[in-house]
Length: 348
Image (cartoon, rainbow, N blue to C red; front, top):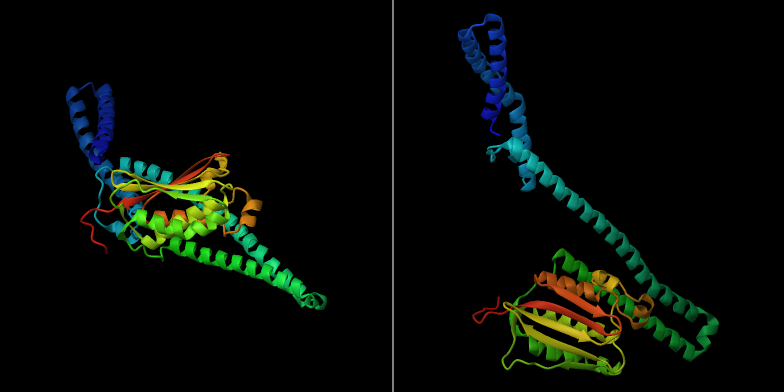
């Protein structure tokens, strides 16, 4: 409601009341009209001045402060041009909206704090495991009796070296994911044929797949190349991580198949295995750092526990998405999208 309308209504009520009181005592219609007009004008001027001076101006300032804070401006910018014609109603809506946004932010901060505590606990555990193993093997080697058995020395050194490698992979992946989260790693978009890259990755991973007796299957169903616009090296890392994951958790004699689907302005890439699958309750947390569905088996298999988190961050940096669907005992399918390259696309 506009200020003048609000003041007029209040002045009208007061003027009418005084006019009726005067009429009650004087019984003069003329006195009633004169009293009503004079009181209406006087009350309107006084009320308008008082409300404008001590109430409305304060509300306008509050509105300006809230509006500028929402826009991310400094408080000193609040003295700038006024942007609302009805601040009384607008400030109510602004406060409600602000409260809603702040509530969401607080919930997000609580969730991030929970993730931070879990991350610190997980990283501490992941680092301690290989460090304690290395320390144990070194202590055994420093034992005078242990040094006499050369076969035992070699065994301990191999075990220590394996844990050093594991520690090295872990630190490398932590460095990668921290840079991805902070935006330090640039995304170098270029036009390339995704089917050619998939063939290169499957050939690269074929040796590891053969050790686990898993067949890698990719049949390019397109006669022409499938061009995408993305960072080739980082998408290569995405494919390596997903295929490596399918091999680790696949079953002996199983398969890992890769498929391409052409959408309107995107290319959908699917990596499907017929391994053990993932329980439904674990799917929402699958891309969290260090999250493992089967911790004991995961550590026996190896890896840093950051592979899927890295995949998610790489695709988010491309402004693309990754999804997973899985059934226990049947297998899992990881699907991600890439921007389809235009015919007149010029690499940057």
